[in-house]
Image 1 (cartoon, rainbow, N blue to C red):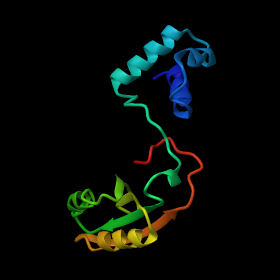
Image 2: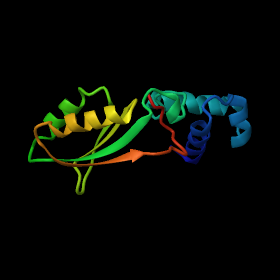
Image 3: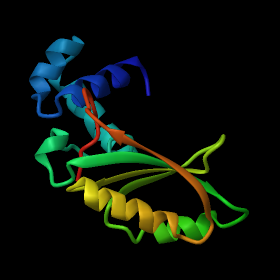
Length: 145
């Protein structure tokens, strides 16, 4: 990807509904160039789709959080499979440092959030966790589903 691709992606991240003509004007190139760049980025897999980004309070999961999880020994694959069975878990990240996994989760209420935390902590292989509630999302390029 070159500088023009990066600028195009930045513009699309802010508003993926912009017309090719508007993007071309902002980038100082032709419509054909923008269209060709977008098609190439889609074919290469750099752009995998376009989406709508909702305010967090506009979806069912009003209570959202990040859970950092410590895993014993070689239990990571087993724990990740178990977490994949929770509908409240939207994303699972492996990481380095103190925590082995970072999990994004959401529920409709604090009571449900508490219940899912309790169920997750009972998964064999989890030795520790720390959870932070997400209070506001001033900016995101990710759609909450």
